Length: 348
Image 1: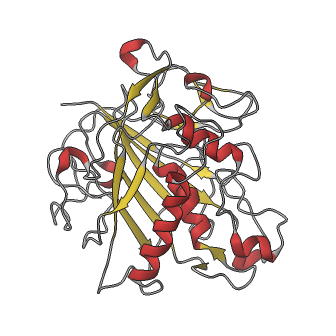
Image 2: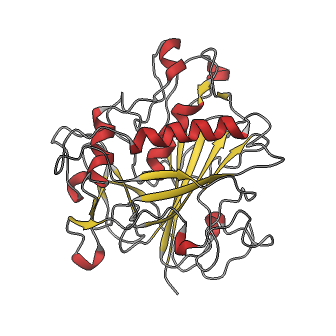
C-alpha cells in the first residue's frame, strides 16, 4: 500500500435501521449501511441493524455508472467481458427494476438506474477526490487479498480467509450526509463462482453480484433468511436452489430499495445538519458519471493506488464482503457474512 496524503480519522462501518428512514412495514428486517463515525455511541436493534446518530448511505443522482475492469480484452481469464457485462447488467437491473411494495403518485419502481459506462483499463480499488474516477467491478482470479484484515460488520475481527469471501464492495461516503461518492466491487474467482453453476461445489455468479449490488447502492444485511441481502447464500438448499442462487428479490429486498430510492424521485436521508432526523430530499439528475463528473478509462495515477488507505474529501470507505464457507471443500451450502472495515476521512 502506497503512502497517502491526509489520513485524519478512521472508523468502522455498519448498518442503520429503518428507524432513520421510511419503513415499508413494521415486519421489515432490512438494514441500511451506516456512515459510522469512530468515537460516537452506536447500538444494534433487534434485527441486528446498527442504530445511532449517523447518516444512512444513498446515491443522490437518479443514475449511477459502473465499469468492468479488463485485462487483455477480457474481464478475467475465467470470465469473458461479454459474460461479465451481461451478468452484472442483469444483477443491477434486479434492483432498479424492482416492483415496489407500495406506490407513490402511481409510480412503483425505485428511482435509481445503474448504467454500464463501458470497460476500463484500471482495476484498482481507488478513489480520487480531485481527479478522475470509475465505479469499478473487478474479477480477481489470480489472487485474493481480502482475508482476516476485515471485520464482521459489527466491529469485531473475523476469521474469514480467501476461501470464504466471495465478493467485496467498497463504498466512499460523505460522513455528514451519507451520500455515496464512489463504489468499487471485487469478485473472488479463486473460488468456483460460475456464470452457470453445475453442482453444489459452485456458486452462482449472478446471485453473488446481485447481493453485492445491494451493498453497492447502500443496503446492508437483512435478518430475513430468504432475502437476497440475507447473510446466508443457501443454507440447506437443494442444488436446484443453488443453481438459481438468490437472484430474485424478496418483499424485504424490494421494500428497502424502494424506501431509499422512492418511486417519486425522493431520497430517504438523515443528515448531521438536521440532527440526523429522518426526512426526504429530491434526487439529483440522471447523470451516471462518477464523482465530480471526471470519468476516465485509465487509473488516474499509475504510481499511486489509493484504495482502502486513501484520503477523501469527507468520506467513509466501507468494505462489505459476501462470504461463506467454501463449498468446494465442504460440499454443502454455507453461510455468507458481511465483512466490513471502514476508514473515515475529514475534508481538507
